[in-house]
Image 1: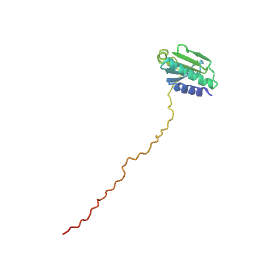
Image 2: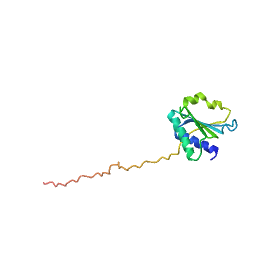
Image 3: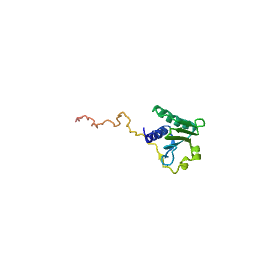
Image 4: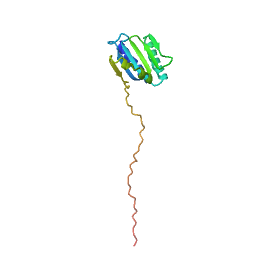
Length: 150
C-alpha cells in the first residue's frame, strides 16, 4: 500500500468513529520528520481513544505496525507514529491550543471531508387498499299498473 493510499485509509478510519476537522499536512518538502501528519479532533477522551484504537487495530490487522504511541493515559492528544505518517488525535481545545496547522503553515495542508456512502432509496412495500367505493347503479323503482274501475 502506498503512503498516499494509507493516508486515505487512515482518514476513513477517523470518520468511522466520527472524528472531525480532519487535515493532512504534507511534510515531504519541508521536513524529514515524516511524509504526512494527519490531524483530527474529537469531542471527548472516550472518542479520542475510540479513534486511536480503531486506527491501531485496523492497520495492525493489515500487517502495518505501529512504531510509537503516546498520550493514551490522559487522552487529550494521542500520537500514533507509523514513521512515514504521524497521526495526531486531539480533543478540540487541546488542538486549538497547540495549533499545529499554524506551526507547519509552510507545508501544503489539505482539509479532508467525510464522503457519505451512497445510499439508494428503496420504496417501502405497501399493501394495496381499495379506497374507491364500488360503483353503484341507480335502479328505477318498479311501478305497478293499476287499472281503474269505472
